Amino acid sequence: MHNPKVSVIVPVYNVEEYLRQCLDSLVHQTLDDLEIIVVDDGSTDGSLSIAWQYAEKHANLRVISQGNQGLSGARNTGMKHAAGEYVGFLDSDDWAGLDMFQSLYERAVEDRAELVIADAKVVREDLRTVDAFFDRAAWDELPVRYKNGPFRINEEPRALLLEPAAWKRLYKRSFLDRLSFQFASGLIFEDVPAHFQLLLAADAISLLDKPVCFYRMGRPGKITARRDRSVFQVFDIFDLAQSTLWASAADELVWALYVKVQMRFCTWLFRQIRENDRADFFTRWAAQLRRVPQAAFVRHAREFPALRERFAAFCVRKGWFLPMKHYCAAIACVRTCLPR
Image (cartoon, rainbow, N blue to C red; front, side, top):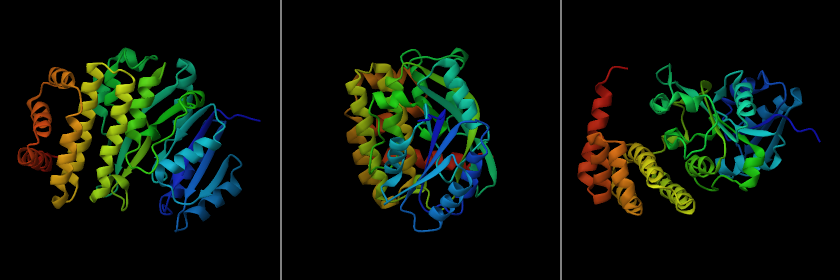
């Protein structure tokens, strides 16, 4: 059986308006040996029909149709069918640069990497702008030597501060198989525990400091725009991440970086959710953060000495809801006043 260089898994659910742009960006990739697996996750619009149209024209694209299992379930189904030496993902409302998978594959082969992480661009449809991705500052703070060769996470733990997005990474399939890896089923924000599990387990991580794909913001129905209580699933997600850290006997620096990631994620959601759900959200957040080893907060204060960092973490651990609420309101005010 022929094994392609890369299998790209595209989960699809009710994205007929955006799917053609996504699939066009894949069928025209410069990598000459690419398998495209489209997993339709029970779409009720014209998405499945569009996918079949592409499958009829492109021999390297196949379609799998299943009942709705969520993004994790669709990705996991795609992994079961993937034959490539490496596996990548692309969300169906985003699109790839035409050399995305050639660039990722060449870096993976050159470095014998089990995991390659690349940069991306943010396309804001409502503002009609293209901006740097959210973790650009974290990229800029990483030493150059780790951008030019493979490393393990204990050599440069701050790579944990890169955004956990699975769709701008490439994974060696044998690495995923060795871990019996699957995305957490039935939960949103599934990239977070995968991020910690895979970076802590990889023997060779490579970085590709180049934007390779485009993340669409501002479309209706996007998971990251939710304001209801479904976002409380973030605590299940961070429970899984904490379990990984305990199981791997993570040191205090890794725990401190976990605190940084969790604070960033939960502060964003705390500001976004409906006003009448914030107190409950904060209670869960505080309880979860108290389960982190005390040494992590001492190290967190040393690694991130800015007063705002320490103040926010202190408020949450102490359960000070109103100070944290006013702190987030102040952040929103400052960001609104800043020039774009």
